[in-house]
Length: 232
Ligand code: HEM
Image (cartoon, rainbow, N blue to C red; front, side, top):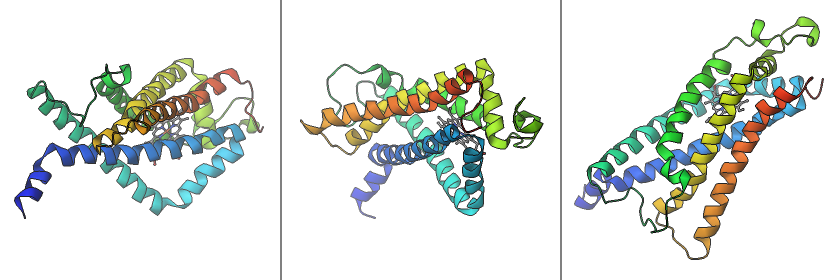
């Protein structure tokens, strides 16, 4: 191995690039997950049919899950090593080619929004992934003759509890905040800096963050406000 490659593998450059790539994998998941979740507006049959389709492709789903778990673990661990190194060598910046502009709120709070997202995902898996999809928690009073409404019922009943909806709205706001800085910093990491396009990328990154947060937040708000689900 040449000294150059050895230096590259040991340097923070590779780790920053891996943070960017794993971040993009997670952005892909979040956007796909949001698109699937919006099917809630189609009603119980549409949403449950979507959940069933995912179960039908279980082997592929597991490949994606393993990819997501590895990406998440790498993203967290590598970011932590970069932050620790950065703290140790004050004055040097984690971001390549960082501008002298004041750091935005999203930039300054990346580590806190990241921690909130980890805590949220743990609660979220407990709420929906590990919960029984046919148990009493999936039966919605007054609907479907007292029979389970499966995953739809679980989500509906979950968000009818105001405290859970508030937690979700706050959590998905953290996701949006994290993305609004994270996406643009992928471009900084690869050293892309263009007088015309960089400001556009910055705005687009914020727009994606806001849309993702609004899209997810709309679900608990809809459930809280609606008396009966659409499509029933
Ligand atoms: C209001 C917002 C959200 C709703 C209604 C929602 C809904 C769901 C539901 C119903 C499941 C279970 C799927 C199943 O077991 O078949 C699930 C799984 C999951 N959600 Fe969400 N979700 C939301 C936001 C998020 C966000 C913001 C993230 C990530 C930051 C996320 C990450 C996950 C993960 C990692 C899984 C497990 C996926 C798997 O088992 O393959 N969710 N979500």
